[in-house]
Length: 294
Image 1 (cartoon, rainbow, N blue to C red):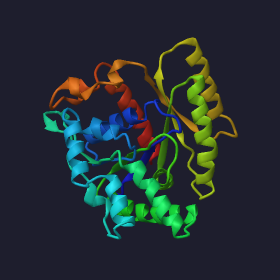
Image 2: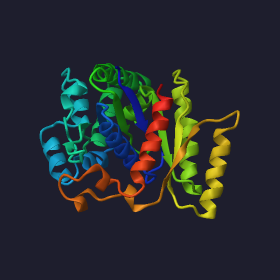
Image 3: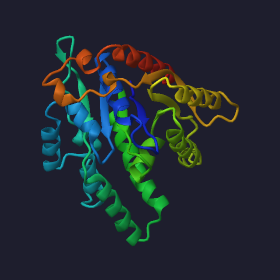
Image 4: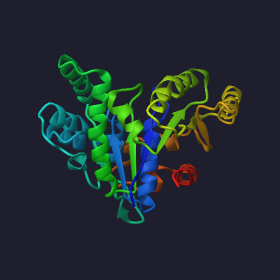
């Protein structure tokens, strides 16, 4: 089976993108699907959450070994080496156990160097008279080629995108079968949603990307304000001119969706990492996603 590519993205930070990425990746892996997380955020939080208890040490080692997504860019576009994304995959990166076995979850880690590397790439190629469109085309083609190779090895590839947009992010969005947009149903967060579904998705539609993004309501606290905004979002998703769809599942504002891996200790179980009703909510969301990916 060829992997389905899911991107988790939003123009706004602090809406639960990384939490959504990791909880879904661990749920897919626990269900027996070969799952890969690709961390595209320079903060590398998805990498730290996947690694778990000793995440900072593992990430430091990956950075020290030049084995991150940033190094893939450097090798291919500065050193002129043909390095495939598959060479940067950390197998069985998670410290989580499920049903007595380690969770089979792989990772391509990020690095704080990523944004600097992207900027340097832009400077380098624009100095050679490349247009931004040509730059995006070069990165996009290499990324798509490498994703095509990875698809034969995995069932699900989940990409954690940074706030805003970049050459890497736009290329990954264009290669995705499903774009999930975590959004807090409040006034400030919906401004970020408008930007993402407007300008950013319009650019993708201009490149014949037809699938509408799917919004996931996150950190829902059930206050009257959030209830009103959530209903307005659902109304917009159901309109004839809709720029996005919405999941039925809503992620509540609860501690079960923001567990500190250091507090869990080494080798936590999946149910310990996502306690209470969290696993049931994650499972419901995963089922919705599988329906959309058919």
